[in-house]
Image (cartoon, rainbow, N blue to C red; front, side, top):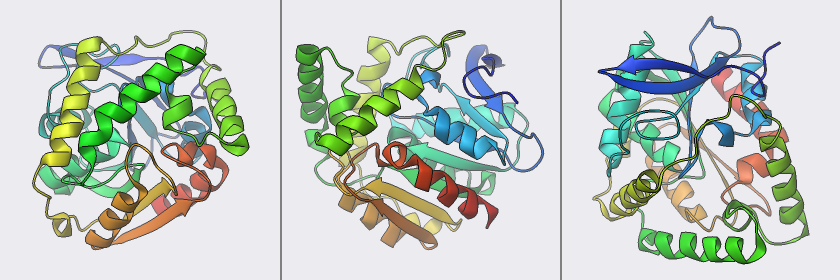
Length: 277
């Protein structure tokens, strides 16, 4: 069976812009569209999460506008990111999808649900919070500090952003990066400097934006996070779950922003059960 390690990268043109994506799993039923995190490209999805969901669903992951191998430039705001994601989904011919959004991808998933409510059947929002969440002004400093540590230790910044710096967290980080390294061919392009700066501006402006009326999002939603998220404070996930009419909250212990990857063995069955309704 095709896995995330070897599924080919495809492109689809939308108004002249090529969008890169990968898909796997049984193509019957409602597709599950994955929306990835700040600075991430297709190669940054955890294979255990993708393959685990694809065992029972048609999974599609893509690079939004300006990210990785997708053309054009990354927009500076969440609304345009949501509109581009909607255009991609509709270009593939789907009238309804499930969404799995992690971090920035969770914010984009909320934009999709607000802009095109009929397009969304169910959503999983991981490591993310609502627009207008407090403390978002700290994000550039948190990210900047992690990049300084990464440079000093020759590690990926996600060692410091996604996982706690204790024995369990360090082991989880090493295992996560080993899984990411399993794919060795047909790799994606890294995000550009323009793309990462635009995403950071979108995240920061989203934090300062007026709160959205999440009560208008009526679909079932699974909210997940670690209990000590440095990037999106864990209480923001809890606040978001309270404001959504049909939401379930899961908080994983001794974990941070990447809690769903650290606890993928528990997260994947939770998502499968949730998508099954």
